[in-house]
Length: 528
Image (cartoon, rainbow, N blue to C red; front, side, top):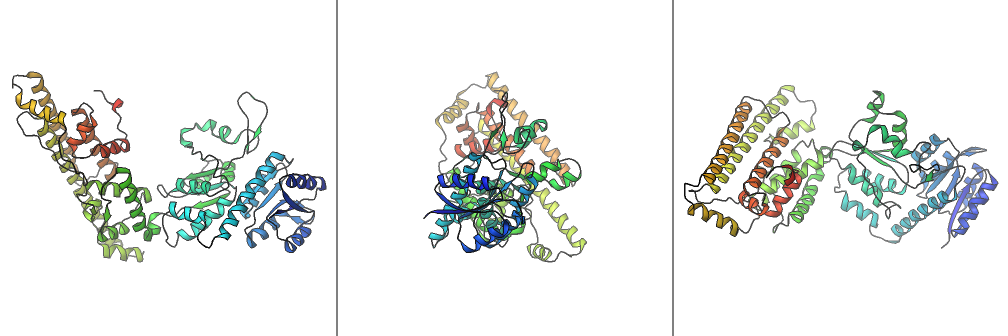
């Protein structure tokens, strides 16, 4: 079937040029020179896409953009005069597919038409199947959740994927802004091109504008040392957890830049706003963890643990949920994850749900709950310190000359508790050595002394915690630091032999390697 297009512009020569270009691409087109003529053509014919100028003799092309976008899914692009970027942005907000500047550059026009044809092809595929479209399946598999707030979000993402407009993704840290950005790319006509994530914080502020946007207009770049600008076909998706609007008002963010990137804003909901999605999200993350860690038995949440997750206040959103589950899988001794493995503070669930439903609860009750959570938090930190002291003591016993080698199976799915030959040989050599070997004796004293010092430091911290003082950087950071120090201690004792270090810690080599990567532990950071 031949593709048809409606071209709207009051310049006859320009209309002829666009018609010739479309004909060479196998597209049949009609030309309209006024807004009223364009409306008449649109009502009497069935077009696959539309290309319109914004300044027409009897009105604005924005009116046509609004009418077509509200009544159909047909892609419509606009032609703007030089310096009319504001009108182009307004058209994109009203639903325009893309825009092209005057004077018209034929390579840019052909690229725009090719993108429109890809959108048309996607629409035809979706109409031909009675099932969910491939785009919808991809969306549901990558953006997990079916709560009330997720339906309009997914519909908006599908619409944004069709457009070429810049998108501004806003939302708290951990809500999945990069996931949505990649989805928009993979669902768009640009899916065969590259998705290039850029950390703007790593680029000097003095170079930001020139590096990204050139020196004269957008969608062009100029190579260093060259005098000509080259048109490029890109789409910018921006994301931040900061309130850029407030930063603009405070003079900390350029207003014109904010205006350019914030053509269409998509605000992502917090995890607390979509608690119904927590069970399916938890199941999804547990499956990923089981696959990454190569666990024999996939972990499963108990009903009570699942309900506790739904009652938790996730300040870190989806990212925090995954961290909680990774910690729970590590602590659980069986594939079944219970409330005790989650490491979350105890709360009065009945009271918590009542407070969630009634925002006008008495302040005294809230304060009591907060006090209870602080006490529970202190108990958790104290328990963590105690557990760490026990593990360090176990390490010292492992290398002591007159104490039998002891290892504890801390990993829930470890199936092989056999010691490695090198460790067995080292253990036997401990017994065979003469007590007069001063070097070995000094080493053992050094390790024991270091453990005593660490224990003293932790007891000092514990005494502060008992006085009501919490770690300055929070519980999560404190626990990660303890875990990091344990792993480094085991690695140093085994001369950075990861296999033996994993054995000392009672875990697997794969799990240790994963934790080292997560905690950013590199061998070249420490002296042997």
